[in-house]
Image (cartoon, rainbow, N blue to C red; front, side, top):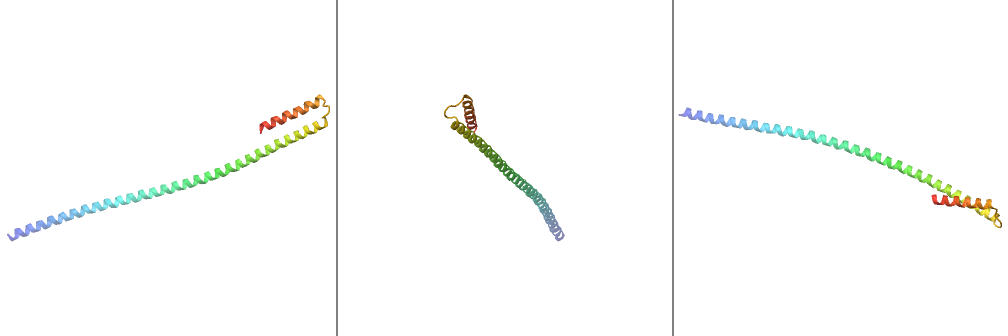
Length: 135
């Protein structure tokens, strides 16, 4: 009976040992899965960081290109403005010269104007009117 009890006790210890070994194996498997999952998440995090860095670099490049384009546009606008201003000044100078010529002619021929002078004055006045309308 003592041998039987000892044998049952050994069997119980053996079963408990087997259960503990199985539990240890399950725990190791879970730990391995967690490690693999952690490693996968670390890789994904690293990939995401790299994607963010690339996106930031691209945004910076686009910002720089946009700033250059705006600066170029500003220079072009200023050049166009100066060109337009010079064109206006030239037209104004022509208008003033024509007015001066008309005034000079009117003063010279005030009393009795021949038909040719009247036509010339009218042409100058017409040209002045056209140039003023273009402004």
